Length: 145
Length: 479
Image (tube, rainbow over all chains, first blue to last red; front, side):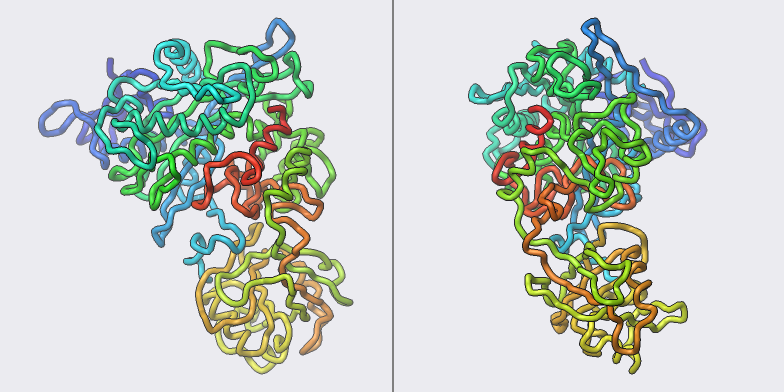
């Protein structure tokens, strides 16, 4: 069971990108399905190349960002229980994400942030790197001025 | 969409709980933590690629080694915590967001929170799912795993932090790769309850109720606990640098046995110090003399070589500027040239230390990078805001004196990562660090702690005393 995911994009001009209705375990964390593409030469379905995957994901992130900009956040729903207690299901905004980035000097910096949006910002380079005072010169060695 | 995802996770957890539990922590554990393998055939934990043993991980397939690493992290917590209710972590390996130079390693967290259940130590307060079960002694939602974890199946491959892989060994000998056990131990810690569910950016409580975390989080500037603040007060408190502290007794009592004494800092006093009198955070330099318990004391004098009144000190100082800084602590502004060039120019003019004022907003002040073995005086960075405060007291200086006395050194009576009263500092930088602020220790903690916002390479796998304060904090909230 498949459906077309992208339309009228430069990528779509070359590839028909399909999303399989995969098992939950195989789904990406953002809720999108497993990505496959139709090879423009053979016409066969196959896994995307890394470059194709990145292009697909960039499209999806752009679409999601646009959706977030126009959609008010949904308040979490509390469930009242017979004994007077209450429970609330958490979503991705409350998950802790470990994100690693490679610095210009080749060193690696790991960040722990809460929520998928914060994780995306780290990858987009919008987050100030964490520097420990006087004990991790490696992380700021290239910051000379 | 996210709700559907968690419903799916619930169904998956229920379906897999009995049939696909990959492993269960050892019989000696005080709590049983099971990794529920949620991967489909051939993927993630079920990847049958043959691999050689690594770092004590004897799995013979990639999938089994991944499972062993997950279980090793779970066992750390299982041996530390006490609960009569088994803790289930639904785990999968998925294609998470990547670029060639960055990647989401993974995510984890509690799936549900509860309040006002029997035995809750605080009313109208959210507790993590696993902690709720521990307190009630029953599984409050058997259809749902208490913790959900997703990790990146593509890490290291082309386009996904290319060339940097998860180290699956259990001995922390990760080299240039990412130690999976450490990352998992950290993220599982959040899932067990090491976090507030209150939004630190807006101050809004989750569905209008505080988290158990908020009962122990104090804004020392206002003297208010987070549970008693308004949203605006909480949002402001999250930006207060070294004024957001943990008040739980287990952490406070254990802290002297974990953290080292010695906090670098700048004290300002003197007859003309006025409103600038006080203690300031500093970012230390990777060059020049290290700060020590014997402070460098001198009058603070600014360099002025720009039309707007600032001083960059990128060239040898003029006679007037040299007179100002000679035998004093020079104050220069960041920008245009390297830190080492600035400091060397002041050293050549006779300064005994240098304060570099940041040129962008932010606290705490980062360190000063660079190297120059000919520099022998100490130098530090101070925040733009602090520099502005100090400069305001320098307007009535003479050519060689200011009456504003700087005292630059290490406070040996204060623990690294604690305030002057010995309370653990929580991470509260300005500007707000989305998702990192508030629910981690401050990065000034030393030795490095597992639950700082960045995992440091020198961490051990320990979550208990005397190496780590994580378990005492969990004890404070009810574990």
